[in-house]
Length: 220
Image (cartoon, rainbow, N blue to C red):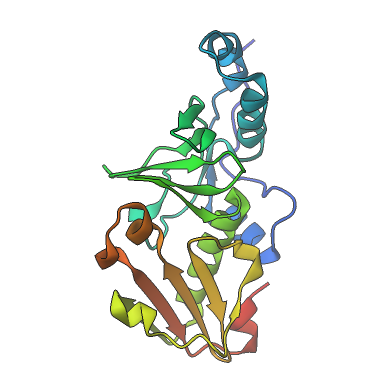
């Protein structure tokens, strides 16, 4: 029997903010995801622990085949969320690829041993506490860009000089190395991942979205 066609309209996984759900279902595209269960025996023979295969399979069931608009940093992030063969990141433990890069990059996007989403460059650098946080950050960036009256990009020492004293962290993005901050009329995204992971302070960057009203500061 021929495979049933896949609807290109994705259904957002449970547990996300309304903003992220809308983002996925209006801006995302679902493509046919690969069935990684067929690789289980081969991966076991390679010495990959069964628990890691199960972890990768759970990710694929929830996120596999989802294509989202490009991120404003990291050259857009993964092209399509899709699991690759689990591997050990040096002394960190077992991880697995989260999707291919859109362009040639000096690092890969991975799900770490503790479920964090990050980049494997000169070192493993977790960006968000989970893939949900990464997706929330994409949704927030798209929302902020749409409603802000001005968007300002700052780099290097100007990032460190930002006064975040009256800002509060945005919890849904689950920031680790990267973070989002909410103020009285602005949102700030701070991207430290490349600066840390590549030992490249010149890559430190922040985006300031200004002129937001109370609704636009949250947007769901």
